[in-house]
Structure formats: C-alpha cells, structure tokens
Length: 184
Image (cartoon, rainbow, N blue to C red; front, side, top):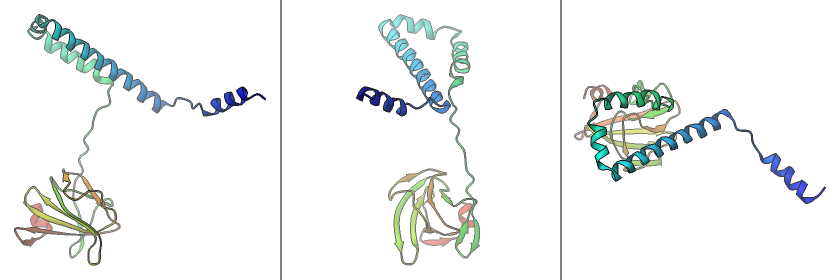
C-alpha cells in the first residue's frame, strides 16, 4: 500500500456525516447572513440615493410591508424565550432554607459585595446588596457562580447548594426575616 492510499484512508475516517443539528445551525446561519446582506445593501442604496429614503418612508404601504416581512421572512428564526423562574424558598429551620432545585436564584437586581470560600463558620458564602439596599447573606453553598462586585439581575443563578443553605437579611443595620423581605 502506498503512502497516498494510506493518507486517503485517514482522510476518509476523519469525515463526519452532517447531522440535523449541524445542518440547522448551518442553514440558520446562512439565512441570517443573507438577511444581513440585504439590510446592508439596502442601507448602502439609501445612503447613495437619499431621495429614495423619502419615497420609502412616506409610502402608506410601508407598515403593511414591514408586517409582511416580519411574519414571513423572519418566522424561520428561533424565538428568544425568557423563562422566568419563581424565586421561593421553604424554611427548613432557623435561617436554613431549601428550594425546588439545588440552584440559588437571585430575587432581583443587585450587586455581589462579598464572596468567600471555606469560612470556618459559614462555609462558602456570598453577600448581595439588592436594589432595596438589603444585604442578603447566602451561606453553606456548594459552588459559587458569581464574582465579587458583579452586577446581577433577577433570576441570575448565584450558586448551588447541597440540601439546604442559610439565608439572612439585613436592612439599615437590623436583621429582618424572609417574610419581611418578601413584603418590601
């Protein structure tokens, strides 16, 4: 067997069939590129011929055209779905809580002001200052998934926990309960 035949065999073994997932990605990418090219070409035409812009945007059928384009041409694109998670934890005992999953989810917007790992008393913990100026300390966590001084939004995954975690609330220097916090 010659070296050329051996190389050909190795190349054939490396070829992988095109799966449906790969084809869909490729197809959607090509369609997006074509739409982008149409928009860029249209913008270039309008820039070079400003009189066309007034004719296009003064046209009484423009709204119908935009609706048609939105419904027919863009319908193939996957929609972005924002899945909202209900953030509710059940009290186990004292300041210990658990939830529906082992993920710790942020109640709302805020900023992570402290992250510490392997504390002798609290284990892995983090402190969030929320938009209402409440400091929320989450402790006894498994894996912290945010960084100190990171801005967070509602439903951001902060960390994971094993079976339960500790959560305390402090507002204007005073400790408040989970129920008080929910009422704010």
